[in-house]
Image (cartoon, rainbow, N blue to C red; front, side, top):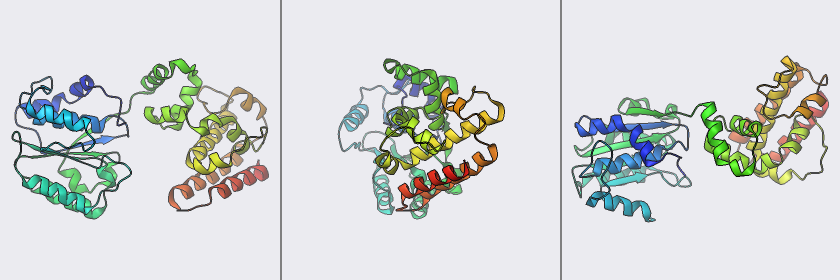
Length: 333
């Protein structure tokens, strides 16, 4: 799922672009960027339908013309095709290569089927390799008069500067902390999640609401106390089999440990619990006087190195990383 925006929200969001389209002053290449699952792809598709609509107005597309009918049929079908809209990179499990860019070139070589425009949407444009980005750049530099582009990216630093310079950029912002917590409360109202839990998963998800929702159903979160006690405090108080969880969800577990140690450092510093979300009161009270900030910072560096190893080393022995963390914690305290 791309995001949580509804059509009326997208229409409001894209009003400035729609006004430019109505006055024929819209830039030929747009870049929608920002955190994942904030509705960038849904917005791109909405705007593509709007641009192709033959009866569009200031509020959006008509939904009745031939192009809109074809667009809706395309969204409902598995092939997701519209004669005047080409969407690339929707399948997250499939890489986009130079052959796919050639398909875009072939698509643009034919004049529009319904109206006066053809739209190319490139999802995950920041995941394209250098050769593919250079091929896209050539098309952006010399587009046909009827061609419009919507690129979608999370990290603009991975895009060529020359591509960025040719796109009108729009950032999809993250909701505020209060908005995120309210959204999570509404989403999980039937599961009796307390605010402390919601703040914790929000922290683990780095402020991303959709990731926070996934955290709440994660095996790592469901075994949070066992993982924290073993790898933050060096204790095994429960006989919980963690090997499979640590192996299959290593990065999540390491982030949980990282933020747990960070909580401990904050508590040692000022004995306050206001901004501590991973550790509970019992764990903090039992840790009183047992740990120093210096040792905690040293251990935090070990956790950071383990995170880097999982991210960068193919085939790394994850269980050995966790065993080394536990051994280090037991020796250093």
